[in-house]
Image (cartoon, rainbow, N blue to C red):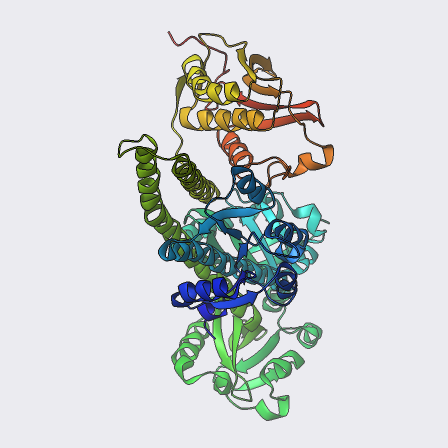
Length: 634
């Protein structure tokens, strides 16, 4: 079954004719349509199915659409499922507000336009599918992280500043400390001082070629020096920018000791690596237990035979080259290759080759030390594949959002514009009923337009694509524009709105558009949730620890926020008081908080339930450096 067929939406209406009409309109979208004839029936369906969207009739016997929506939101499984209400074209404004209060994302009035209904449904279905894809990518990466964490070899993840972000238990054991102790420490603190230049050279190579290998001495927490063979793999963030690297490390101290003391049989017998000794002709004369475990042959089966039985046909020249080089005394650096086991299975190995000498110093043979790295190679390939899949998913998401921007905002702008023309009566007189209907259309279109803009802003911020222009900003002019824009909203509700403490010469080095957007969000929220009294903007500059900052405090006498709800304030799509009619998206505070951080500042909250709130934007005067003291625009 394809993804499109598997996507389900729930249709809830007590009239069979309405359900039949909805099914006919949505049939071209190739969705799985689940039908419910009442609110209770809908709740039963949601226990059995996960749906991308709910189309819910408002007027139903038993329990109506508003009660049904409230019950849907109480269940964790359906808490965030989008709900579009279907209602009569003459619905009162209070009914619309009530719908948004219980969690509706949109209203569609009957009789509905088939093309508009399909377009809206398609938007939410595509968002649902994209969210599912990204969730799967996230789950896959978390699963891979757990695999890496429990891998046999030492694996560490470091940031672009060469500091440890995380290590698995095997690496912590290699270094001789707990995983929590090493996180945050410099990479070079675990590298022997005499080998740091060698490791830095490998690091620079990795930056150019994506991958590099190096052998170096590592220093354990107890001061013991061990030899590590390391593979460095470069990683990038979702914008393709270098974000750090993985270091796959294995302790090769035993191999080093074997090169120095190749005749010590106890090391050979106890080693977890396959150690094979051959004469100059390549015939096997020594074969340890680890070689038997890795390759499957016993000593009796291989004794006197050439070691070429372990070499795949495509690697024969590689073995001949190695034998020729060590025969003349050339040192062979460890390298990765592929061997063939007794069962014909291909085995990824890391191979060290050293000459065997007689007491006179003559080369009489070679020792091959092989470590099975099949698991590590598999993990490396899987990590690269997952990174590539994640990059593709992010590019797909960006293209999708660009499509939303063009395909939805263009017709919405037309709807808003022509509705405004009709309300201005440029095309003739309107009845009171027609005016209310046009105002409802305009309000719904503006709400959907705001939702699209907030989602696009959210995407740009989360993907790091917000472009800020830091320049001197005259706060007096900017706040005057904000006050002029929002004062009519306060006057309409009978609220007193004042700006206090503003210095006419106050200038900040910041991004003007972002600062204006934050202040509009904070002040409009204060007005929205204040029934009577005042909403004031208070500005104050101060110096703390040598840094000048300005505080923009929005103080209201509104409903206040409960202590337990204050932790939810800056979560996306979170609206705390559903009893207050609101056409917001639940993204305003979240986006404002993100923008304040990009400006080098923060948002602080003080609130007492039923007494009012204070939201304070704290911004440095000069995030780019200097003492940041206030200065005149002159």
